[in-house]
Image 1 (spheres, rainbow, N blue to C red):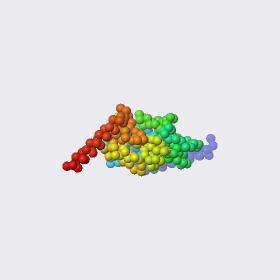
Image 2 (tube, rainbow, N blue to C red; image 1 turned 120 degrees about the vertical axis):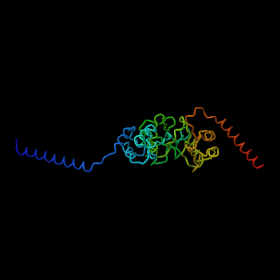
Image 3 (cartoon, one colour; image 1 turned 30 degrees about the vertical axis):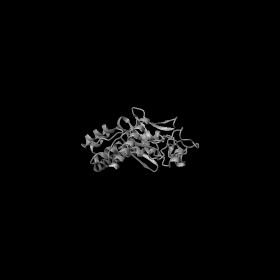
Image 4 (cartoon, one colour; image 1 turned 90 degrees about the vertical axis):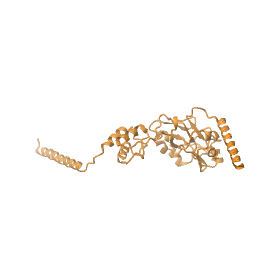
Length: 301
């Protein structure tokens, strides 16, 4: 064999060995010991890496949880309270349960009530569409219908209803990761408390135009009349910029606001019985009459 070739192989092998040893000693010198609890927590997590917890992925969540003094700022929406109990046990922290949440679409501008005034012929993307103009209808606040939220959902919990042109949330699949919230350029999707037995009330509208303009653009729009605010006895509803909002932490699910809303902008979901508008209105009328009578009695005294 050629001596030059032999020496070349020997030199390269020796050089490789030296470099390997150098890299080994450098790695040993500068290696960072990782807390074994990080791996434990990461194995406990669902592994969705959806970012719904606010971190880049499950490993980043686990690393942050181990370094935190408590878990008040940490919650895995996919795993929910069951997973967080296991994480708390690993870290020895107290577990504070959180109410399950779900995504709700705050737009009820269906094709039937929100007339189309032009045709869009561009990229099928809500974000692109929103950057170009206000939309196909007279409502500049409503759903653009291109399905960015559907594509953003990694759990198959969203779909577009061809009849209404609006996204529909599958409550059995939604994990409240929040990706659809970020994907909607009109901020129409909100994470709200799932509610007892899935029951919840919310204003399905984001239109802040004044009443006549909002009504003209969409028959189902909130017109900012304030009837719901006056009706609610739990201070759960506020009116700001011509738009009502229901605080799910204060709402008692009495459905009185839903019954009194003149445009049907307030939606009740998963209630066992149909809304009895007549019965609720009669109850409110009696209550108001009693309040007037009580006030007169106090004044007479």
